[in-house]
Image (cartoon, rainbow, N blue to C red):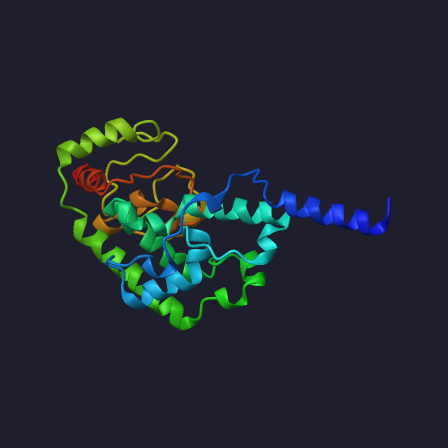
Length: 254
């Protein structure tokens, strides 16, 4: 077989493999136009600009596909990463999300931007313009302040009786009031310093978190433990804001 024939077949094979999607096809989700993303939401304008310009390629259906994103097997890895990113947060679906999920995500966006975890290193190596400047992080700080303020306002306004039902349904697998189980006993948790129950083995992160449990900290912890303390052993959260408020009200009485 002649060299040019081999080369042509190789190119054809590589191009053809680029149309194979072993992890799913993120291109199938229709785009509406980058300019429409997050329009009409309560997200501050400066923060919206950062999200659209820095985050939309992975976290929305408005992905701008570079030419190399058609070259397999690299294209497969790119598609896999985008699918996983959209599962965690899809800005194209923002308006369809419940308010409590928006609160959790806005807080997480700011925390990850502030810590430098986003965009991830492998993405920044290929997209230098995706790096977040100090001004970008400052713009996103409005998200964190907004989410924290909402949580603090909502916390402590719940129904303790309904909170007891939430506790019995969702928490008793790991917790009890007066004895340690997989998690520490929760009697007297309100006003107690995190990681301080004698005889219970805590994660290093929680033990040294310097957190005191009150309305705001319990609300934040229940909504997303990993956002509050990165090194912890609690894999459970309470995504509904009303359930969190009721649960905090119940714990406050114990």
